[in-house]
Length: 247
Image (cartoon, rainbow, N blue to C red; front, side):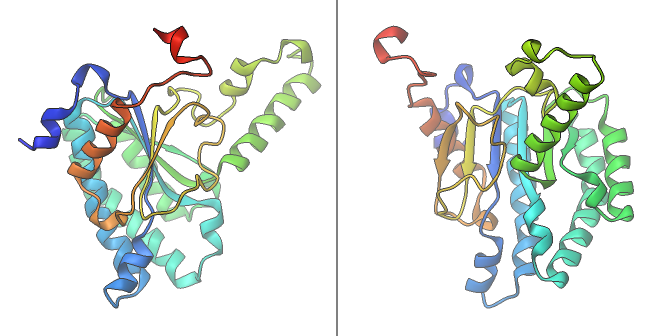
């Protein structure tokens, strides 16, 4: 058993971990390869981290796989990413199902090509009754897109007379987010040395602990996940209160 794993307090695990999987392209360039080479190797990290989270008993793991802004990347990279997404889901769906992992997708699914959407829907259906780790893939997702969508839906409810303006609360907003069925993340990890959240879960990360590492995503493995969790467990989570109020 890893020394780091032994340091983790299993009674104080974050219930929901969100990860911005950054650095595939830079990792590939450092190897003298094209960006897609990095994305292919990033899949190994996804497999390892999903397994690590499931072994620990984490309830929810959200992976930022593809943002709405990523559609503006060079066409060959976008096409390659879609093909990689489909082939990965095809290979991994059975493994997820065997390990009782339930797959969810958040984002603008209408922007995905039909073949990718069909493959995703099949995997979602196959794992729908599973009761282990909830694996949430953020695909064609951005926080601003999600909030705009929520505002439009709430406005429609008001317009149709189903909701009073005075009755709108934080719970109302949460109800119309993609993540309405999930708890907010308690720990957000970003790899590859960038210190920003890049339009990811803008509403949900309000009180998350943020952890940044220089490790490129294709090199990120279970031990790196354990380091992030240990760091999280050494922090004092105050939620706007003072330390004295907590003690």
